[in-house]
Figure 1: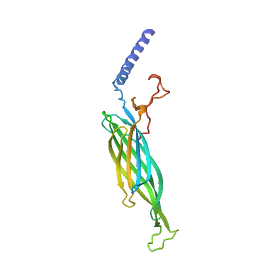
Figure 2: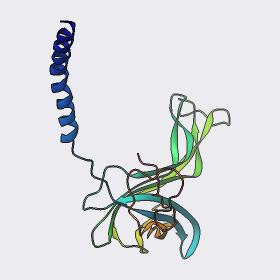
Figure 3: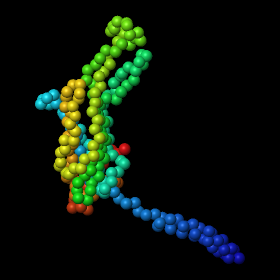
Figure 4: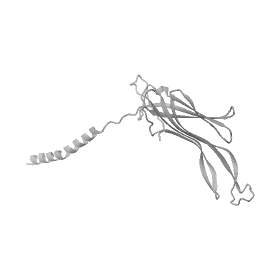
Length: 229
């Protein structure tokens, strides 16, 4: 009788748990595998150059590394660079606030099947150029003094939003602008290069981990890792 009772209990438990295990197994089988995103690592160089007439007075280069996905649409993720300082300025009534002054670069790109890239850039650069005295007193007829005035910085800047169709190794002079006050001419050049050491492999969203493998003829290969936001 005891053996019969044990067999009946075991059969009942098996009947309860078997459907659950089968449902979990079917749910796992129904999950579609995630498609891998194929990317090409690229190097984007941006140069801000200023001229006074024909004389070059300033040249500021920046370099961004980006994994450009293959397809026909730009992805929301991109590469960003922020560099600069916080400058104090007066807001009236003896109050002050800080303004970010420097360079902001945003980059997105996509590679088409024919090998060309569509590069979307948002470029912004600001700088301090001189200063002007600002009275800290509310009375406008009061004589300015060193104790009652504050030197306010003169902040100038340039901003450009670009959509460029480019190929590997190409340089484009994308922007030419003249400052109406100083007369200086600002030129922006953009150069795109495919990272040659990775061009013969498929870069995935999940980089390879661990030591280099010998499965590819003794050469360890890794995907380029760039900061994405």
